[in-house]
Amino acid sequence: MVETRNAGGPEQPGKRDFLKYVLSGGLVALVGSILYPILAYLKPPIQAEVAVSSVKAGKVDAMEKDSGQIVKFGSKPVILIKTANDELRAFSATCTHLDCTVQYKKEMGLIWCACHNGKYDLNGRNVSGPPPRPLDEYRVTVQGGEIMISKKS
Image 1 (cartoon, rainbow, N blue to C red):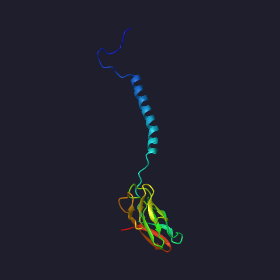
Image 2 (cartoon, rainbow, N blue to C red):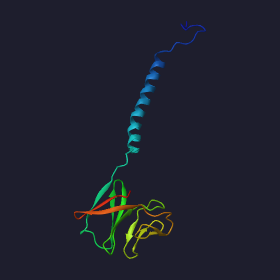
Image 3 (cartoon, rainbow, N blue to C red):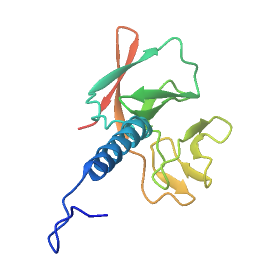
């Protein structure tokens, strides 16, 4: 039998090589088209911080004396406290130690963090436990029976 190859010259790519490249590319495209939506779903979109200057926290009459409630201030929680003498105070509800959410404890008369037993007085100052600094304070005003919470300047 006689071969028709070039003697000593480079081998020319054939139909098999072309088919191999086309099928490999198709396989890569198939895997990419399956993985991309899965990875895009698992990675949440980046959302900009909501710029909020004030929020309504409810009616003054609806809130009991010596109680507290968590109010959403944009994307951050704020704790609103109505003291025994009807004073309204608001602080960041995020503990300054490890960002746990604090709560008002009526029986202790203070703001308490359940994560590591951090305690704050009703002025937001850290009293005991690991919190390194006081809670951020917010301004509370009453307009037409509605409680308004805004950032303190």
